[in-house]
Amino acid sequence: MKKIVLSLAGVLIATAFAPEASAIPAFARQTGRACSACHMQHFPVLNPTGQEFKASGFTQIGTKGKFKTEDLSIPDNLNAAILMKARYQKTNESPAAAISGTTTGGGQWQIPDELSLFFGGRIGENEMVKVGFMMENNLVGGPIGGIVAGLRVPMVFSAGPATIMAIPYATDTLGQAYGYELSSTGMTRGIRWAEHRADISAAQYTTLGATAASGIAMVAQTEMGYINLSRWSPNFAYAGGKGAVQMSSTWLRVAATPTIAEWAMHIAYGVASGSNYCNAPVGGAAVAPTAADKCDTKGNAFDVQAQGELAGMETSLYFQTSNAPKSGTTANHFNASTTNDVKATTFGGEVSVIPHTLHLGAAYRKGTDGTGSKDDAITLTAVYDLFQNVALHANYSKYSGPGYTSATGNSLFTGMLEASW
Image (tube, rainbow, N blue to C red):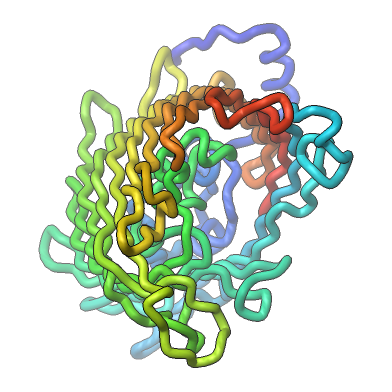
């Protein structure tokens, strides 16, 4: 067994607790497997097993808990889980600007920052096709009756060594890649390796992976990679409003997923293109869109993710670069500036210094904002897993650039309890 040198304090902590990576347990209930079987280091980072489960359309079921008869194959219970995030955030803006409890400069408790109810699992399966679903519901507000926040329904067809998928999807904030994405680089807002999303993910900084989207993803996948071609609209769900079903934008994502020297790799490029009708009011009246609602949907991202071991410790390494071009005669959905591209490059990594328990990370962002100014960040992260489904997070980011002053502050600390059950 490979030895890891730990401090005395680390040894005491490791002795006191024997947990593994935290996760939403809905699929653990379905598969009968530990959350750590599908997650690298901690939730929501997926390992190759978790990526395989996602590629199956969330349909894999364990040896028990299945009801099957002619033309019916479902779990005997609906798989559900609740996710809660309770955060404390503090920036270092000047006391004059920081009113305690109302701004992050005065220190702000956000309880809950997130409270979501998840459902997911198999809808049906036979020799030709598998159908599954994943549904996220906000319990503390949302645009459609305070409930639905995201939905995808993968239909998975086997074609020899390849898998073909058609995935209708809708999300309020997770981006056009929400239909199908296997990386943990932040290409979708909800699947990122650290809490300060715009500081550790270039795609989150440019908002390429952080807006409303509804569409259909057509995916072809083999063990060496996948292609995701999505037709989508920059609006969340059809509710009769402006342009909500005008799926005239395109998202193309090409990814390679080889194993190199025992490192599981995810190397991908994605590009959003086309134009659409934006600003559709969810739940609004059936009003015809106007020229003012027109927008381009242009942006791109390239990223590399590597998962393996360094000195016997689980390690993940991340690189991402993203660009949202400036708006022209038509506004760009990802960048309102008419004078400058918004772009960023991020480097990061995370090491499990106590296996399945304590994970330490760091990231650097080199960014350019809509004014053309420097917007850089250095971030330190720590995740301590109390149990597979309960974790304590600490993120600290230090910012540099002309947009940061003593009045607005140039640092952010986040302490967070994340739990799911």
